[in-house]
Image 1: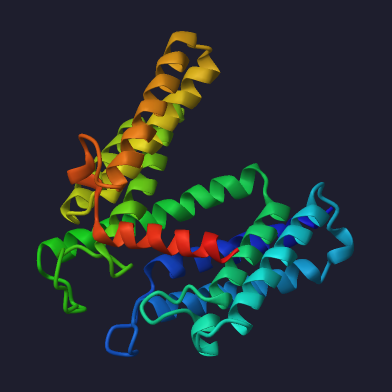
Image 2: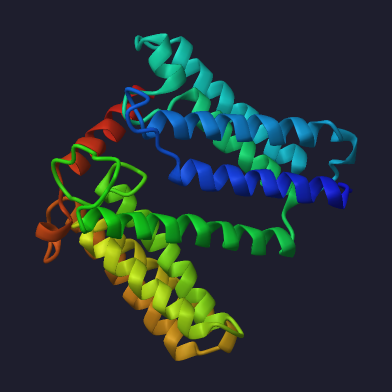
Length: 289
């Protein structure tokens, strides 16, 4: 069993690293002032907490540890194979493409954080994570409002939506705010106190998400809110609501699936050419095997 002080220290480092990864930008200091600093913070955070956890590896006794480790090892080997045996430049495979930085380092860092978080997870750390999300979410929403008002001191050269937040992309900003708004909504509904402040935060956050002019946030919030309703219905044993939800969810998933392919009544709302390109990428990957 892990020492409580070690768990607390790891939790604090992950919390700080999460906030910095979400909000750190370095305008005028780097060719990529958004994704590169986030990748660096993510990698450093993952490396530090992994070292702290493995320093007491004899105390790692949580059920499922070995299974998770084997799965991660297999996934990492497959990633490394695609990096070192493909025709892409080695640096691109390790660091990712410019403007995304979703290469081997980023994926390994995410796997590491998941592995460490699995071993320190408890009720206290869950509450800490919620607080962390509130800090990152409120900062992102506030910065989005600053950008919308046209008083952003960073002076980004934005060609589409004026609201891109700390993520440099209106779709990413909208989706992240929707995730945060869903959490705030859940705290308002399920929490024992501060209900109206949480409802207000959720509403304010979704207003900023709407100002991004991206559809992802609205879709993500609808899905998140519907899952929240489903969870409440299960806890309350509302069988009629559960049945209606399952029918509605199946219908909604079908409409969204067709809409992403520019089919059905909501196709004109959901369809984007970049999404179709991603379908082609998946088809190519599947055929490769």
